[in-house]
Amino acid sequence: MEVPMSLNHSPETQNKLIARVPDITGRALPEWFQALNNGPAFLRCDERANWLADEHGLTHGYAAAIVIEHERQRRSRMGFM
Image 1 (cartoon, rainbow, N blue to C red):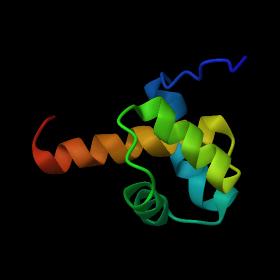
Image 2: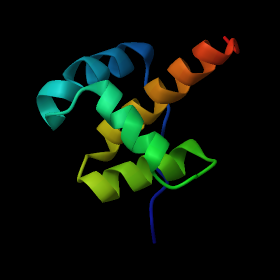
Image 3: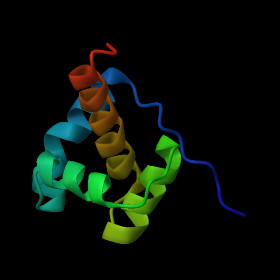
Image 4: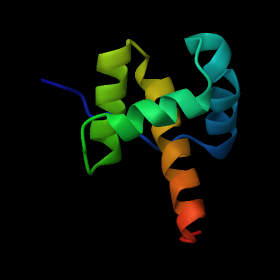
């Protein structure tokens, strides 16, 4: 049975995870955002985070942080925030 992954980090935890993404993963955020844009068209954030973790060998914490940041920036560009 798969345990549901939480995508609810505190803002402080989210910021710390995002700041460490390039050092931990060896890839900058824009590269991860491109991977998400080119990946499967999942509608739910948890599905996207699971795919990112499984496909690229990330921990679920970093995968979730990348998905959350990607969504935040996408919404900001579209004027939803």
